Length: 267
Image 1 (cartoon, rainbow, N blue to C red):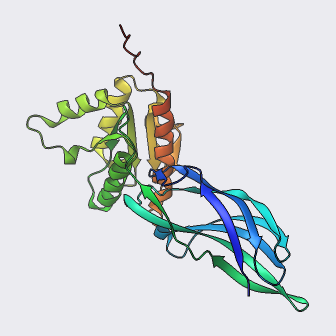
Image 2 (cartoon, rainbow, N blue to C red):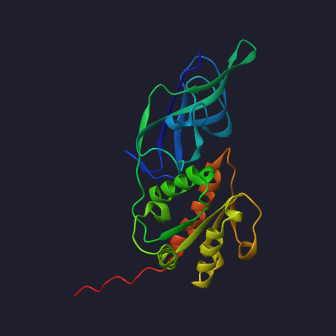
Image 3 (cartoon, one colour):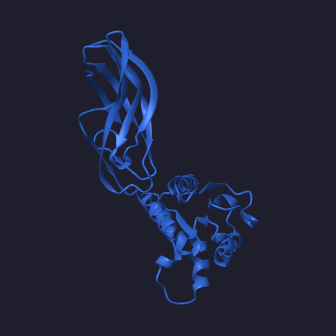
């Protein structure tokens, strides 16, 4: 029977706190074969409670005799953009074969017995505002909400007109909000292509002097007009998370480049 022991740690140390869309890694300082037979490790894994039957893995080959130890490479992971905030668990594992008699016997993926914990929190507020341009079709609504909530969890101030209850004319407010924003995120679906409002919002952003890199696109259909040539993230209704994550990564890069006001001089 395969028996093993590993020492490992997340890159944020003890009691780690991560944020949605953030990259992390787990390092394995040593792994020891505590069983009676030689083992062959072909994969190292980390499984979080939000993954269902999936897991993060890294292919790696190592053979260990009984009582023999070795180091394994780090394994990376990305926190999902839509993960619930709060406490979560994970387990480290290995895909392993055991030498029994004169044959390798596949033992599959064996997870450690101990459950480990980490915390997912909302990213600290960034000084970066994103206006979300989208169609008003019901088919797009749940994705717009996902985009908005994901941006907010990543620390951005995200603006969706329908969530703001204000009196007065609509378009003067939308123009004001676009001009106040650091980026325009265009949710360019097959419904947005025919939306006059989306075209108007893009026109306002261009007229306000937004550079092409400030107009971030999540694209379902072919780009048109002033959007042609812009960088974009591809959108798939069956798997929307990846496109949203790719767009948020573009916005994070912009936020990191935004000039900061000089620190106040101390007396």
